[in-house]
Image 1: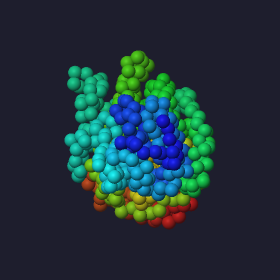
Image 2 (image 1 turned 30 degrees about the vertical axis):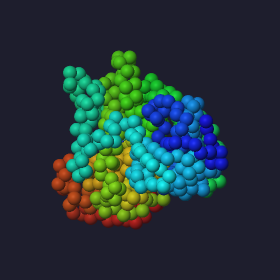
Image 3 (image 1 turned 90 degrees about the vertical axis):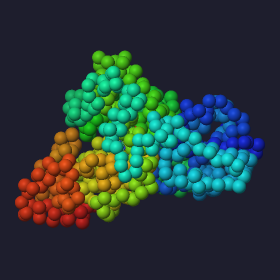
Image 4 (image 1 turned 30 degrees about the horizontal axis):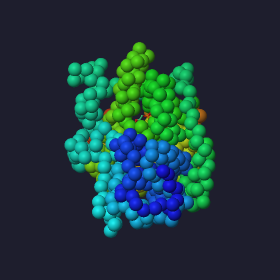
Length: 521
Ligand code: FAD
Ligand code: SF4
């Protein structure tokens, strides 16, 4: 039964089970059988629309996926209460909504799946109601590592590097192993990947889904929910488990073959290149990381002549390695992690992050993709927009808010370690062994649109010099005390040593001028 109005809710239930918008895991053991006394609650809540300003497509995708999931549960004979914003808007917080529903449904037990975000974990852990005799949480049964096991892998202040963690996961999960050793002889084939995308390489065909979300958009407007980005009344995200599995098959058939090779490529030919776009589906739990990895392996077995090991290993490392690693770091370092600001960066995020109105062609392209699709691929996030923010000394709080809001796949547990840690080095080196910085030369080498840019990637200083160049050298000079001791920065500082005093002065002066007028870049 699907109830969509609070007025229709009668008492007589025993247990209320809360489902958050990123807990759409149809394979959770909760759903093995329908129990009449159990009421599932999914609600569109103001607090989730306003904790950060979201991209309109992100909000629509989450709410539409929640609606579809409620219908799925109803079809499986579960009792479901789905409240849209029209009903939920009266409840500014989740607590106030729970207070009312617990009374109306007459339950004595509240159960929830452990939230992935610290803020919701803290809110639910502190929740009390006089009518409840039991409040329990269960694992979300989504990740490789259950929440309760994370302490065996991660220790606050003494974290493993990602490669060590990844190898341990490969062994424990028995993935790509041969006699206990890495299949093919190497753990990591990154060196063979990371190529520029030649013009002659054909791009995969797009996979299109189409969902009418105009009702949701109307609700957002009616309740004055402020969003960012371009609206798409016919949304092209995969919003159900079936569609997510179709997206996975599309990726395997069309993209896996070149995934690793062009993983770090930048190209204006397309916004998705050979990336999977699976992050939204995986993060809201429509598909699990384990089933994605298992399917990649079975597909590879069927297509071993066509698909190289480096592609398969490269893709699996992202999910089995990076994704699980970021979650472990998040949970063992929070809540202090969100305050890290190693370089003491304090500048405001330039206005062009919200409009893409900048003459830096690479930034324009990455920001436009973000505004148009609520998506940018990893290297755009890391080496274009993230690199710019780090070099320009933007306050990590502002950087986090932008990343958390703009990407459809952004949930704090994965966004924060990627942004504040990997991209901004604001954690002082917990996630990354050195800051991910580069001059314009790297962006050009990876296929950035330097040829069509108003700036000159070859110039280090001067009015036409690529801003990434000036800011890169300035960053190295400005933070020399903190970074010179890092062995992985030695080569960069060898170049700094070769600069004359006059060159250093010129770089510093120009960077200061550029940063004073950063909005006009
Ligand atoms: P693909 O390139 O096809 O990769 C396959 C999958 O691997 C992804 O779907 C994702 O599940 C996983 N993956 C790859 N890299 C990472 C990583 N570094 N951390 C965790 N999982 C990874 N990812 C998010 O899911 N949410 C975020 O909010 C997010 N914010 C980021 C912010 C910054 C500054 C950076 C540098 C990276 C961020 N990432 C985030 C990681 C990565 O960029 C995205 O997962 C990826 O771009 C999603 O696109 P895709 O599904 O096409 O990925
Ligand atoms: Fe980006 Fe510099 Fe190249 Fe322009 S010249 S596209 S700013 S790297």
